[in-house]
Length: 350
Image (cartoon, rainbow, N blue to C red):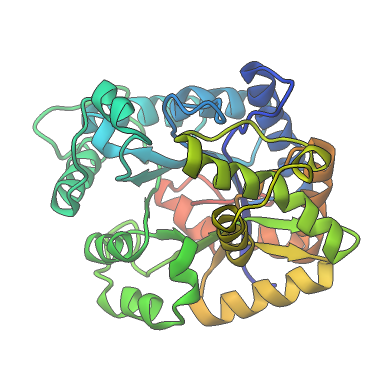
């Protein structure tokens, strides 16, 4: 497949393990992703969510960059309503100075998971206009066109990506930035993505639109085995709607003993509908259809499961579907070179 391939890891916790284990597994997964030829490896921002160990992308990105040699590492994303843009700019300029040409900065506008978390973060709303203003301010600091000059200065700032659905696509088109989308919008046909390209306003760093699509992608020997790999995340999503938080991932054997209510089944079905799971041939067919519909230049797998060895094996199989050569020739190298340092072979931008 003539598209780039990347990974997003949320540092999901697992039953019987502490949070530190989840962070170490994220680091090890990045090492394996680099060896398999993935373009980039991203982490996310969550706060005070029991099932997620990572709340500080910049710190985790630094650890990832230290543990790897050439794969691009970054955020998917930093939630700008939670931060002053100058602080985000300083953090990522520091990362770029220490690891030139390897850092990506994805930004979003999601608020905290619950009202008490939003109160703790001092965030009350995520207005699209505020989001645009925050990105403009962030970009000015990184480009050294703001009223104050941040430190450290870097030769080229890390490339920016906008996360979101319909509103996020519109913001990305308006600002001339790459877009990262996932979820129900991927089932809406080509229209949202055609509009993103039609409305795109070229920017100096990004003269052309660039689209990354994300989904939980899991591969196993059989379709049933792959569906089992998705169950822990599906159940975590179902239970989160009842409990108000994501529980740690549980083994499939334990989940099969849980009663399946109508509400839980709807949640499980929703997770399955949004995922790409199956054998290698089945997954390849689904990805090819999605890429053809969206015109995406990059695929971002966000899968997780209880069995980490099965997860690592699935990642390796997915990389083989794309082929190391296809990954290293990915058009995203052009984007990361908005920070003009990355013509590396098995790397990935976004």
